[in-house]
Image (cartoon, rainbow, N blue to C red; front, side):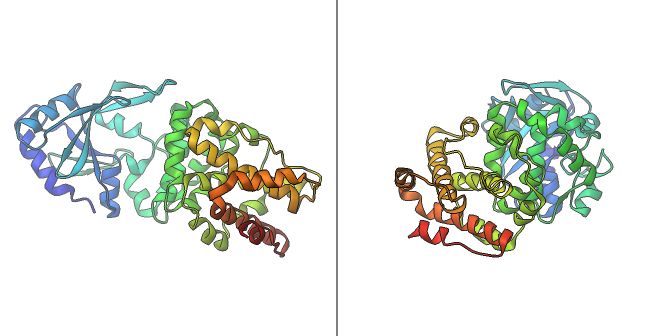
Length: 375
């Protein structure tokens, strides 16, 4: 759990009597996590003064509370360490990320900074001079108590300003225990999800990979699919809508046990693609799964990761054609699929067990597909 009080007292002792005495605030996730009694290794302080981050860094260095200060190039915030915590310093501001990934910043009063943030639970602040918890949206504390992810701005305005908040809503809801997305915010996510297609792929990569590595990935994958977000991340799935039964399968407790055994980022991403293949095999018995690789996800991963994903998905498509769609497949395709996965047999086996689980869920029967793949 974060112990902000001792650090607050040290910082206030340093700024007392200076022009920053009443200008500094703990902000964002560190305040939220303190309230939730969650572990955290980083802190954020915003300063209600232009160039206030530089002034605060200088004061803290002079008082010996921090040493080295570096400027984080992407967001142009100052980074340092205090009492073992990473500390980010910035003026109160509105941030707008542009297409090239850089951030445009406009200095604003602290209240406007808070109200422009993504979600109410991330808009809470603690005044360093008094220790007072400040809720400028007047909903943050209530939403923490109710375990709700609610957008600060109504009518989807926050998602229009920065669509990456759509994926961030999914990640936070999965990451925080027993949280759900507030009803109107969920509707706004659904309505504005097409904006993901306009984002710089690098920004999607950062957020998507965080989601794939979550301990609570099972919850995250359901949210991604229930809001139909994958169809906006992968152009090949644009015209596929998952039906209600497939979405219900994604909440299946038995499936949860299988997914927990998928440890790699690549294997988990392949699982996100599975429902789109499976849903189409059920809706059209004549449909043949295309053996050509997906291309659109390549922009989100490294070359090595893409090869890993390509091989797993190719093997899955081959097995689906052979065992579920009953197509006459050349033996060379089967041999090629087995050769491609090579050392990834365990992951392929888990993914094919997920396929079996799906088929059992839909029809009440099981197949020998996963057993064959593992053998």
